[in-house]
Amino acid sequence: MNEEKQFKNRYLVIPHYRTLFYFGLGTALSWTAWFVVLEKLDPFSNPSFALPLFFLTSFVTLTGTFTILLSLLKKWKNKDQIYHKHVMISLRQGTLLSLCTCLCLGLLMLGFLRVWNGLILVTLMMLIEFYFSGKDEL
Image (cartoon, rainbow, N blue to C red; front, side):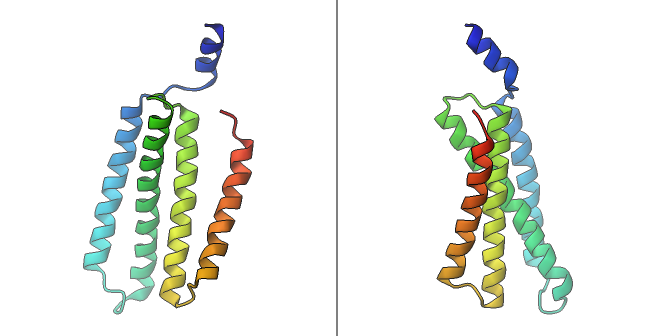
């Protein structure tokens, strides 16, 4: 019983519905912004404005989506107990996944994306995640 109390004092218990609601609200807004950028901006008439906005909204949208999916996966794995540390890990992993996706999209747009480039990029993101996950203690 004492160990459980120390664990709860050490990790902030956040209700999963509140956390996922705020992430879901932000992600829904970013999906809306992404669709607006996709429909209203022409990358051929003004590429200096449309392309950075497309990549920015893509990054935010994918970060929110990956964070929600990874948080739900952690919720399922940990039997409905999500702690602040789990949400932060999901946010970090979602950010790395969306960064990898946006970099692959940029390389594809430039015509430089090959299998080897993609594998190097994924390996780099995995090494970064291994570095940070080695510091995490759950």
